Amino acid sequence: MLMAHPAVLRDLVEQYEALSALHAEDGSPESQQRLNDVAYTLCVSTGTRDIDAALIAARHHLPGARVEDDSVLDSPDPGPTAVTSAGAGV
Image 1 (cartoon, rainbow, N blue to C red):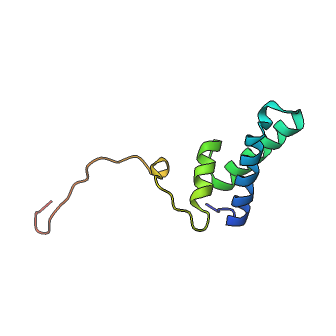
Image 2 (image 1 turned 60 degrees about the horizontal axis):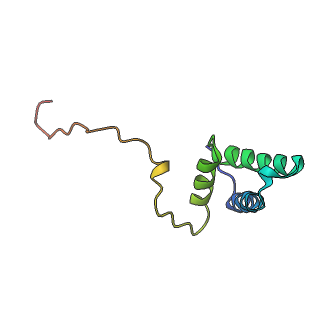
Image 3 (image 1 turned 135 degrees about the horizontal axis):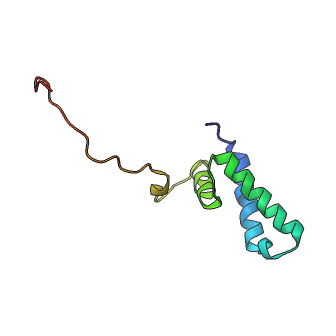
């Protein structure tokens, strides 16, 4: 999957955070649309389907990112795997 350039991701995250801080979702139709557009662009740019996952993925790809817990991005545990030793005849 292609990932947007870190500068683009940083800009999108900053725009989303600014619009959220200004409560754009409760504002004019134009501000609501801008918030929706930025959220959609973040999702497309990170290959995710919701804004929370998009923000996590974007932040994870920023230079110098020190993700404390990226378990949300990990795939589920496939369970125990079979271990065979050489000469076991398996």
